[in-house]
Length: 149
Length: 149
DNA sequence: GTTTCATTTTTGTACCTACAACTATTACAT
DNA sequence: ATGTAATAGTTGTAGGTACAAAAATGAAAC
Image (cartoon, rainbow over all chains, first blue to last red; front, side):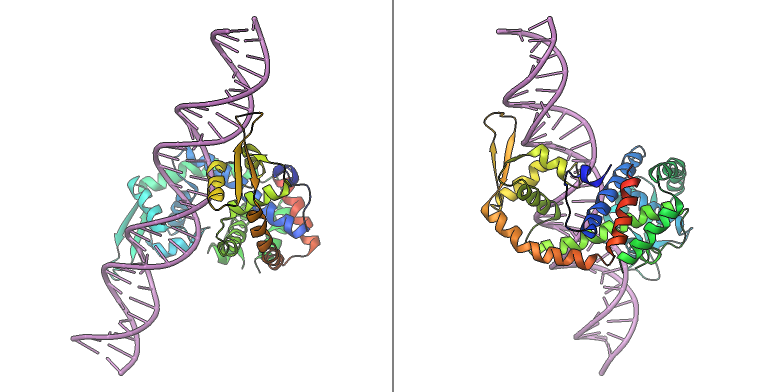
């Protein structure tokens, strides 16, 4: 849907200002689709994000600060997110013995199994959402990287 | 910053998948900058959004459902947002006499004054954030509109 | 060894969001 | 006029987010 219809605003001060709104509308749109899919597995998008980070670490335990820094939303509260995941049996958390300030998090077998279930539908959805060509996606990525300086 | 550094992930399955993440990271980045600016005026981004919608309506009172449909995030809870703004004296709300199901919202003089204070710094920030040319912004907008089909 | 500072995590508060259930009002069919 | 459906808004619950203050631990200086 065109941006003008989406937020019922007909004129913008500049193409740049319009692009700012367009980015935010598109991001919300992607998130809401992902949220719907993940809800079937009783996960929120940040919870799913944490699980994927842990899977990516391949057995190496990861401390909370690392999780935060890899998340899309840097400022989110890793402590409470991980607590939710632990209650579902999807992650382990234990104090690091060499540095007892750290808390080491790792994904459980059950967590890995859940991710496996989600992989295919999530891939399908991303493909479905990306009605743009590889070339267009490249252009988009270049402009966005430049944008954030 | 390049996306790879931003979320410390080195490879992506496709340019499209990378674009999905890029959109979300860029959106979070814009929002966090706006949040910082608005905080000086004791407003949250959705609250600011509501005030601008009301100013755009030019005296015509707006019902809650209209506010929701014009917001970036459609599903947000207009009732409670408007309540916060009312407590600050920035909006009026009264039951519509012809259709008592409706609640008509309008911006107060105090609300208009506050928006005037914010206009200049917000415009400056948007300009500062948009390190991209008008042409690039146009390309971005075209791809994003196409993306959301 | 004690003080001081930095690191890592936890906790409290206030706000926002999604969704579903609920109330009140209006419109419509008969 | 009555029952039914549609519209508009409110409220409860469970999650997420931002920020600041605090606690625990470790490192460094002296």
